[in-house]
Length: 109
Length: 114
Image (cartoon, rainbow over all chains, first blue to last red; front, side, top):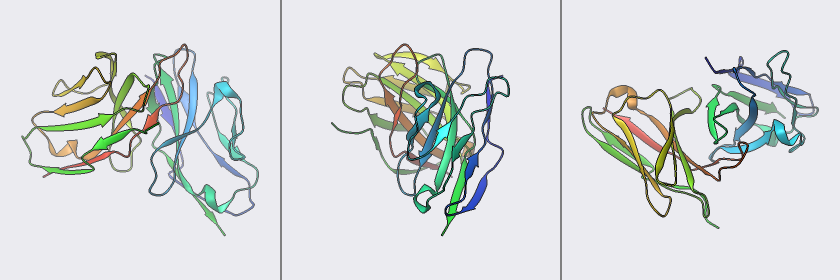
């Protein structure tokens, strides 16, 4: 079965501290992994995808096929990073996604 | 360029009734996907429409059905509503490609079944 697991429902860090949001997946094919973010009162939006290997708003994520993980990292958390983060696995290469249950990140000033 | 819009924003229905939710895709996007997001859960894929044809379906019963129109807008219909159908329903539009790209989400329709 295809699954995306985000083990932490809630995560709090202090401003300036490093942050890591965990995501593990199981998928029989070649995975395409994404991170989506939802800020307060805003709609769900793409943060980054592994195929682009880019850094967005200071966040990076590396696909580790050996550990089947796609953890999201940022070296110095900012207050504006407080949001709900969803890890997503694309299947059928048609923008059809399995989403994890999400991690609510709070950055404490 | 306009974003993905969904209507209505909120809806209350009685168990056993039928409901239709609507979605206008982002300009130029011919693919629309629907997701159900129960409280405290991530979005769960219902189905996708591409050029007016169903192009993939998640683990949802046949009472969940959909349509896509020539202008790429879409409807989600749910018959014989159950209490567990209470959720946020999200619509996402995208452009298909060789690999999955970005899906643009609407603000959602909050359905409450009583």
